Amino acid sequence: MIFDTHAHYDDEQFDIDREELLGSMKEAGIGNIVNVGANMASSESSLALAEKYDFIYAAVGVHPSDSEELNEENIERLRKMSSHEKCVAIGEIGLDYYWPEPDHEIQKKWFKRQLQLAREVKKPVIIHSREAAQDTLSIMREENAGQIGGVVHCFSYSREVARECADMGFYIGIGGVLTFKNGRKLKEVAEALPMEKILLETDCPYLAPVPYRGKRNCSLYLPLVVEALSEIKGISPEEVIEITEKNAREMYGLSR
Image (cartoon, rainbow, N blue to C red; front, side, top):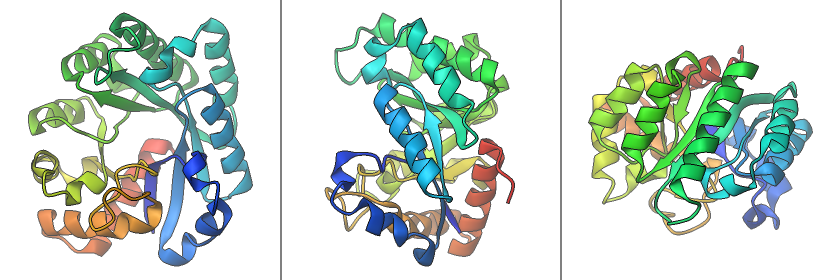
């Protein structure tokens, strides 16, 4: 079964048909989904979704774009949330330099703090990194993130950066961008990495694969990413699904 390692089904874009959509997943071959927090509120709603659906798990954390809402009190709230039986990771956390705000120093401070939290609660991390490769790598090294483990999701850098992350023990999250005409860089990353380092993800409602590009994304479109990956790696779609599911279960500490 396909394991969608990164989704945002608490997003308002799913308000119109969330229940019906999630109810159709198993029949379509989607076995598990991790719903990922991006701020305090969505961390709470990710846990609520995980409580409601047996096949959904949650990650709790604050995205760099929302890092100004963090303080030690909210770190303690995240710590408490992370003890929930269906919380499998701290995320998404990291650095995003695409926009000028929040200040880069604020982002770095709370990226480090959430890495420390993950170490303390013994959970892997889901790292978001956009236009911040060198600072992301240097913080990962500084904090010995390899001992924590996790995934650099929605990967957008070169194969050299991907190899460096993989050498630290991290997985690389691959989604709809693999099917884009301008997705050459991600195709090169997929070619260079061993399958044992790749995870499937949607980041839905964002980044739908071709031919749905620009529309609302969902886990039902992941077979298109599977197909693209199987062509690049020269293995069957079934093998892609089997290996990436095994990778996801290992990273998130879930038994079959």
